[in-house]
Image (cartoon, rainbow, N blue to C red; front, side, top):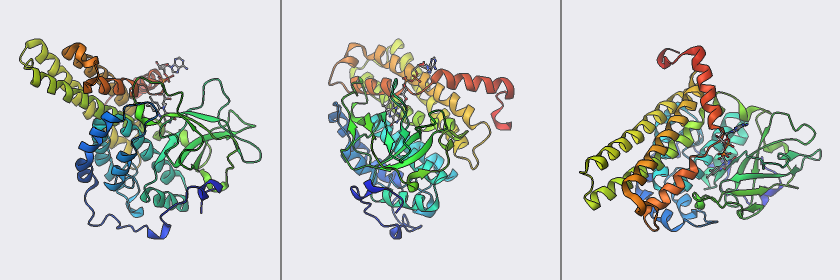
Length: 393
Ligand SMILES: Cc1cc2nc3c(=O)[nH]c(=O)nc-3n(C[C@H](O)[C@H](O)[C@H](O)COP(=O)(O)OP(=O)(O)OC[C@H]3O[C@@H](n4cnc5c(N)ncnc54)[C@H](O)[C@@H]3O)c2cc1C
């Protein structure tokens, strides 16, 4: 068993021996299964828009549709989503579709995919197999990297115990496998190492600080790891692997895919409004609808193209630069869709319970991702040297 003491409190319910490479066999395509549960997920998102909420039923629905294990390598019983080149296109579609139905759920699923990718890429075979068993058992994984501003970063003390907190942890108190970054207490400047920490439901989490206007149902909060004993088996890869390029930057395509789905949901709501009110023929409204459709499709094209580059084996040389451009383009496109929809619908778009009110809050909040200026600047610096002829680079 690769995990430390806490794994006894949250026991793995599927043994490694149940993992069969052909486990999906005749099982339905997870994308088809996903489409069947999306209406229920979208419906649940309307009632779960409250502080401290977590979309437990929707996470379970993703599990039943096969999405929690689809990010495993095919040899581990998954579909290779996010870990093998064949998984790029279906994962891009899944992230968009989930994001369109519920951005908080999309955020949680994106973290699950990211964590499983890191474990399978940098962990040992035994760690990957154990993670596969956990994912197949329906456990939700997460990646928690953000340290609290003004506090020492999460540290491993000389006795091997963790000291400190992570903040902005989606699924806090609900994700039972958390991949966290930590540094030896004596070397705060050292490259971070990854630890896959088993956590019992409901422990160590504090959601009180999550007062954001949107993404309320993402259970994003602080998690205090102080005193938690680490073990050798929790360490995933070598120090610095978490930040290894091009993966670190190229992986941004996944959150951009979820954001793209959020923009599509806003566009869909705008379209519904114009049809219902009979205002779509007005030339100003028509122009805004057309512009919003262009923006959403622009986002989708960037996402799909970035996914293919990032998920190639190995990732293409331009994968990081391309993803940095893609996330910037998707952010711009989504901001445009928000503005166009709010302008077209007017005050009604800001009044509960109009669905646009929540969709816009969730999207505006989820568009805030780390270091957008640095991402665009790094892309521009690379373009300055290598140009933009993507197909021949
Ligand atoms: C819904 C939601 C869920 C999240 N879940 C998780 C999670 O599960 N795990 C996790 O680890 N994190 C999570 N995060 C945090 C996320 O990864 C980012 O850390 C966070 O969104 C950064 O937001 P920010 O706008 O404050 O970014 P910042 O990077 O602080 O950017 C704010 C602005 O400052 C600029 N800027 C950045 N650095 C500098 C600098 N050094 N000098 C000058 N300007 C600078 C940026 O370009 C930007 O204009 C979540 C965030 C959200 C919104």
